[in-house]
Image 1 (cartoon, rainbow, N blue to C red):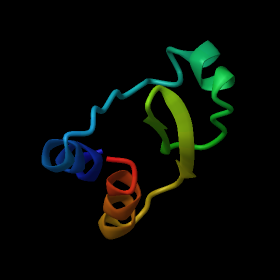
Image 2 (image 1 turned 180 degrees about the vertical axis):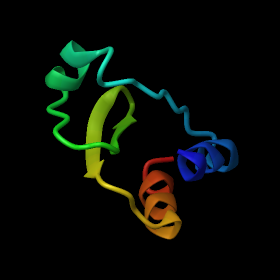
Image 3 (image 1 turned 135 degrees about the horizontal axis):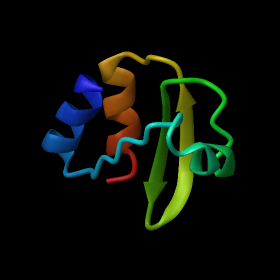
Length: 67
């Protein structure tokens, strides 16, 4: 979470955290099976889904490729 928040601050990306235990319907809608799951949207459409902890450099490259 800290890495994602830092990337949001440095890239201008917007971050929304969702508690999948409380929001099970939303998790189901996006097919979340593991935590953490990062769902990346660009221009209002889902473009990527990454499951599991990822290195900061990899996430930065991914986010920057859509900004």
